Length: 257
Image (tube, rainbow, N blue to C red; front, top):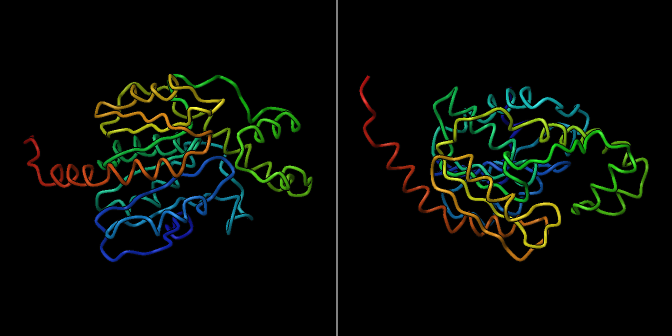
């Protein structure tokens, strides 16, 4: 499994202190986070996840099964998780980030120093609605309500034919994921959401508290559904503290036995 296919690293950093892995929302790709590379502090390297079915992987079928997606991501991310790392997810990408963090902790003994999630309810508050099963018209109407997709795309049947399988697959992965877990993640979680988001309430965001045994913080900002700029601000503010704690944890003695 080639990490290059799965992970975009726009500005490589020699021997980075931390890697920031970013998981995009439904239908999006690594480009959603590309501007972050120029804003990260020295020593931090952006690693944006590049799913099949979009961008330079447009000819590859998208994943519809979360566990198979996690299998591939585990292989791609593990070689780069050889130093402190942070996970950032937006909307459906938050679910993938959470599940991959659990997977790496259970199988590899590696946890992100922090998990930032945004614009999606915590798993305990997730709706049972299956958006990925809606008829085409209703499906694209719902997608348009989220915003973030150019109207010219939604109005072009040929582009929609190309885009629809990837969008449906992404929604299916998120809607079928993050269920059946009782153990909390030993990673601090920060949840960010917009006060004007019609789909995600303050209580939805607060439910992320149930997913961690570590620190939790919630930021309800003046924005709609797309809050990537605000997520970046929160991550930049918290980064020094997370790196300091990650360094302490790495050098603290492990229990015998």
